[in-house]
Image (cartoon, rainbow, N blue to C red; front, side):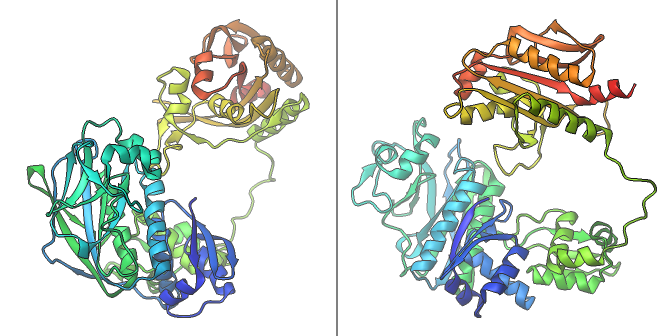
Length: 556
């Protein structure tokens, strides 16, 4: 989760009252800010990836004010006829703009603006690959502005915090941001720019802004842009930035900008409202386990800065603020009600736990999992735990296979876009991170994998597996066979090995583990190509044993 640093005095100024450390420790976790440090005038906290509106003090102050006063933040949205033109950037086709006026800035406000800009680009913008964001002093720009491609050698710009005018190509090699993000456009024949109607270049997106239009403490009116590969993301970016900056506007004025694209398409930003979500009171009761009146639900949503109205049929019509991109479904709203009401209170007030219908006992699968852990650890293996979430690159592509994984519809991170289908990739990744520290690595994991299954009602099947890994200079298939034999022998499982093939492992150095004619696992040497892809130098032997199948065998 991103770590955000804010000033306590700045927070108090925006909230409109002094806050004790105890109040901060109580309120911030309720708005999904996990406090790391409160020291002198500094507050450091982590917040979740789905709350980019909290990536600066302005969003936190807005949420704290709503929690304390039960007020809905309001902004003055106006249309002053501002226009922009997207002339066509095929590899990064979308751009959106917004304007905020009547700002009152100081050094801390500028720092927070830069922090919000950077955190948005790194997290929500996927390190600028999906979207990036820029801010400019509007009074130094003549509207309309244009987004277009230009010759990178003939076009020149003084980059932010620079003194020398450089060609766009030089910016990629001679500036810190160019070296960090230049790979995003370095292969393009022509580079993207944003310029005003006089020809002044505002920025080289998604790399760096120009020095001539930078924001300072004297800036009163700001132009915001976001460019990227996804339209919703770029509009969300400028919306979050605009509504955050408007917290420092004396008039709370946010101005729409219409961006004209080819094909008579017009993008109007920022958003001035989010979706409307209908919530059934029975759903709230079912999920939270407590009876809350409609009025209480409305009151809790007001504490979250969310407007809600009671419909004639008794349901709630929830009006989501434009910057709350985390609220999409009924269950999201129910969660918000629970958080604002107090999860500690819900724990005490929830319905009585149903009486037990029989004596409690450990689930058989957990029993065999524990037993397998003890046996494997007794042979000198160290237990590790990896996330069940992974990605297609690590699960399949690295190992030279095209086997599908169960994908997540709306992943928050490129590292976690789906569910793992086997344990081996996670174990091998640990070798990558530790090979320079340990000459011999022996690790194991007991965990679940998810396999596509057309015959299942859900389209997927969950399996519990034991995965083991051995890596040292002379590791071979024989090592894996010996340990697998020892583990299964201790469990009393009759077994044999038969030559087999698993994609990602060496064809001549892989064996299936069989009980009778049923395969209950595999063992083999990881293919050198996969090891090279991950930067692993020593041989690696892996095995996976299917614990669900072992349980069936033992129960017979």
